[in-house]
Length: 41
Figure 1 (tube, rainbow, N blue to C red):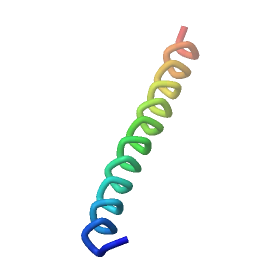
Figure 2: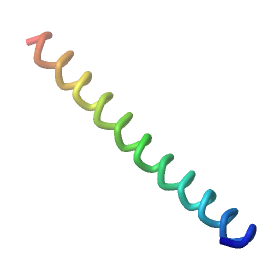
Figure 3: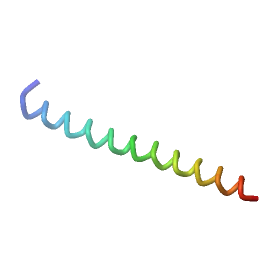
């Protein structure tokens, strides 16, 4: 693998990790909000 390919691979991997992390964070906040709303009833 050339240095250019390695740089591109790491850049793609980082952006994919950010998307997965953002999705996990979104679901964590969503479940927290649902729990708080259900407990307040």
